[in-house]
Length: 124
Image 1 (tube, rainbow, N blue to C red):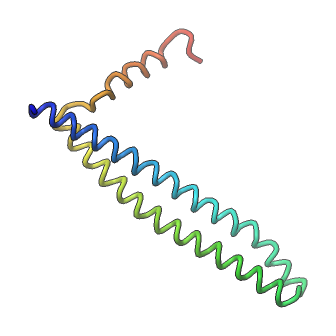
Image 2 (cartoon, rainbow, N blue to C red; image 1 turned 60 degrees about the vertical axis):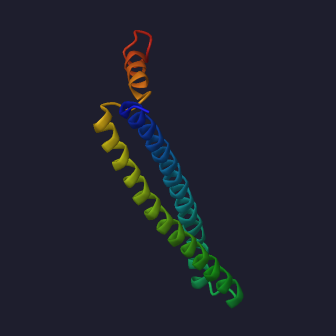
């Protein structure tokens, strides 16, 4: 295999790794946002329970629910940090290969098509 073809193959693989890492980051962002929304939704109930002196079992249930939401948020945040680090490593690898090769296989056609679509007379 020629050096050029080998670089193209490595670049395509790096692009795949980057896309996979990006999808993981997006998934973890969604999980973290979901946990934050759950926590935000239950806080008014907890505040009311404390102020209105609801039964201890209801208050305890709300506290347990809140603790679970905080735990889920922390886990998602940790996973997001790891996924972001993986994404950065993948990005750096892709950039290094792109610099060696001078282009990303298949990306130049996409970029050219994107420019022509954006500048076409019929575009919004």
